Amino acid sequence: MKKYLMYHCTPFIVAAVLCLIPIVFGLITITSLRGLSLLLFLPALLLLLGVDSVIKAWTKGNVNYVWIIEALVVGVILITWRFAL
Image (cartoon, rainbow, N blue to C red):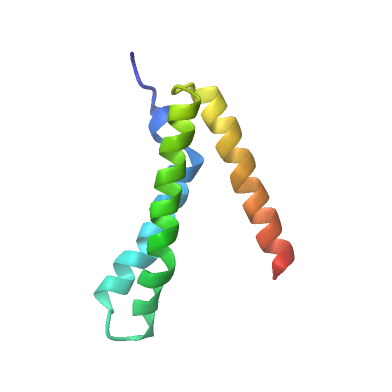
């Protein structure tokens, strides 16, 4: 079965890559307060990758369903986070 680029580049994978950026900078500056970003973003990274694999297994790798489910979940997270602030 041929895997499309959109299968590997889902909204949760993009969010996980965005979580990886503060983790790397936190590891570089571990002695300062930025080292705390490792504690904040590492669980988010692992959760995003885990939920992404569960969704892909649940939808049997159907790219359309994966994107619809993950885009809706990311949208809900962003909207609720915006109103929580």
